[in-house]
Image (cartoon, rainbow, N blue to C red):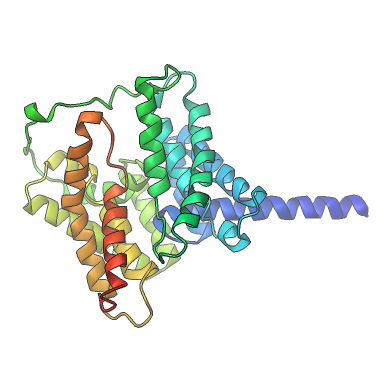
Length: 314
């Protein structure tokens, strides 16, 4: 009888951990839904099963650090200690190479949870969410460590470029459909139509508003980047879309005030702002060979949420 109780308790703890970890995956898109997290995990695993393993492992690590560290139980169960770990684990797996790649990625996932806790403390009185800032800064620092530490071996795809010799290459046709699905896929560094379809399904599962604003944010980003003369190859890859999707959801739905009738409009405007921000951040990082990651999303969302403190109708 005592053994059955212990088994039941262990099973309950395991299921709770897995549910929170799946929510940690869904929280990357600012959604708290275990089913959505599972669908996202399937999309990533179909694209690359090693990436699926690192995604789930990273979320579990971040969630465990929150639980064992004594963090607020609601925050842990909502997946708020998992999403930065997920993104950090995926990014370091993709942008590093060599025998220490997986180990560094998992350590990075653990550090992301600790960094998230620190950022929550620093920003607790601002009313502004930390979003993916811990993931961005931690990933940039760990990638830059590759120039001084041999264990960190940078992927050949990340090459510093001299801006004085930079040329803008606008050529080829734009495949709007492929760009649309790649836009949501790039949130998790995926450039696959099938993965994009599954991710849209996961978002719509959580609620039609999430799905609607993910489509609108992506569509406006595609249009604005094309009109402004963005490189067609980058538009097709979805590199102008993923930050817009996250920003549209954040400003229009997740962090809006109940009485704010203009939140949907300001969310779309904020999504459009991510396009020049993406171009600017990517250019700023060219000499360092670093990816822009989700910094345009963070900057645009902080800008609009901060402005609402003074301009509440925004």
